[in-house]
Image (tube, rainbow, N blue to C red; front, side, top):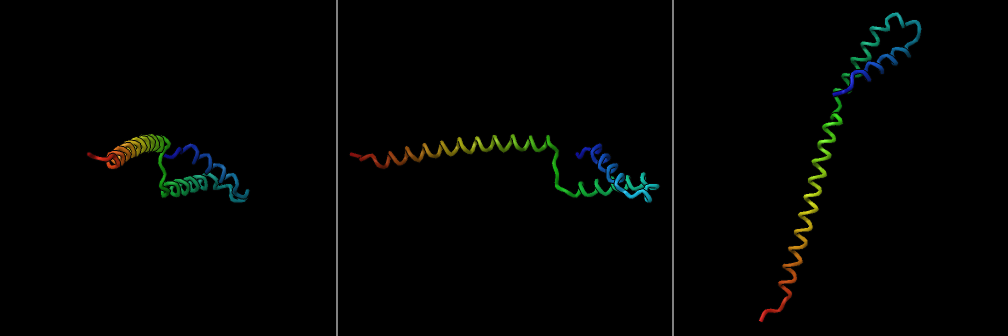
Length: 89
């Protein structure tokens, strides 16, 4: 989930940038900014840090398994290669 306190803070900052003549509706502008920010961020394909860390750990384990399998295949290939090069009597 997206941290709503950061969105609130950004909406407050944006409403603070509004020219003085328009500041009467500052609360309304702040709510509009907040809604636009939430809507825009919701459209992005974002994941939480926790989800990212879980997927990173899965990827690391998968990479380790792949490297292990590559070593095993290389060892088997070298055995098969040495068996075919050995003369038979």
